[in-house]
Structure formats: C-alpha cells, structure tokens
Length: 252
Image (tube, rainbow, N blue to C red; front, side):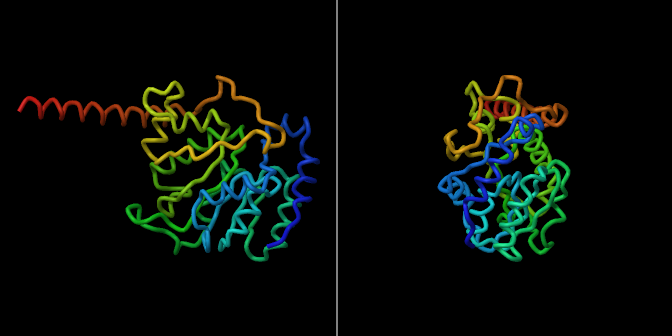
C-alpha cells in the first residue's frame, strides 16, 4: 500500500489547536514512521490477522498496520476531523480498512469480527489483536474496562485471550508494569498483573508526538473503585489462603 506522509502531517496541522485540547482529544500522534512500525512489530506476526485499532487519529499507526498484511483492520475514531485522512488510507487499501466514527468506551467490538475467530480460553490466543495509541483522557477508564472484560471473558476477549499492544503516557505504563516494592505500584498495577501478563516494551521519545507530551499529574488514576477493590480483595484473599496453607504445611 502506498500512501503519502503529507496527509498525516497536514491533518495534524489542522487539529493541533487549543480547541482540540480543550475537547480532551489526545493529539499526541506518532509522526515518525520508524516508531509506528516498531509498535506494530512488537504486536507480533499480523499477517492475515484481524486488528482493532483504538484512537487512530491521522493514521500513522494505521498505515503501518495495513502494511503488515492484515486481513482486516477496524479503527474507531471519535474525532470527525480525522475521518477524511483515514478515508484516504481506506481508499488506498480496498477491503482492508473499516472505519467507525464512534466512542471506544461504548463500541461493541465483540460483534465486529467473524465468529470463526473465537477460541477457548485455554487455547492459543485468537488471530485478533488490539493496537492503539490511547487518548490520555480515556486511557485509564478504557484499560480498566478491558481488564473487567478479561475477568468476564467478554468484549474483545469474547474471542479468547486477545493480545493488546498499547501506548500510554509513560507514567501510566510504569504503573501498569510496576513490580512489588516499586514506588509506582498501585491498585491498577495489582489488577492488571493479576489478570494479564504485562510487559513494558519500550519508551517512545516525546519528539515523536505532536504536541510534545506533558507529564501526568498525581491526580490521574483509576476511577472504577468497585471493580478494582473486588480484584484486589480477591488477590489478598488468595495470599491469605496461601499463607494459611504454608503454615499448615509447616505445622505438620
């Protein structure tokens, strides 16, 4: 697929505005093709895969996914200003790119791909991937929703153990992957690592985004306390059960 990088930069020029930031729309889009291809490579072999991309924006990562030889790429974008650029990519890759103008927090991805892709939970992961540069204003609510989906085996995980390759602000990524004793360790860390294998793969430099990212404030964090507390209570209960078992073994 051949597309010009000019359209990506031109779209960024149009939306990189105070209005866009006030809307809460994340405009930190990778503009370096090396970075976007690196993200896609980390997702593994995408040949003939079905991919769900979240927050495609002007299509930097989208183009790299299409060039990986996918069977189908579904993108969900809320900001209508990005749709013309995405449509150009769709025209350049007929039958490969499906564009949905909608909200990732409410989109029903479990209905998006063929039923034949579904696998048993104990089987190898399905040929379905989630890839995305998550908008900062929805990244934590969205990952919490997906983790709840994992626990219920619904949403994108109705297909099985769907693999996710996601970019977050550096602080969020560090919290997700923080090990025991790390100062970034939080309830989000416990929940994510209890339900998933979390790996902090690499850091993308700020120069690759428009505009350059600002650090997260300390107020950012999970906002689904009932589910988080439920998961943390389950983990703590298992730890207590293990301790009781160990003491039982010692006393024998």
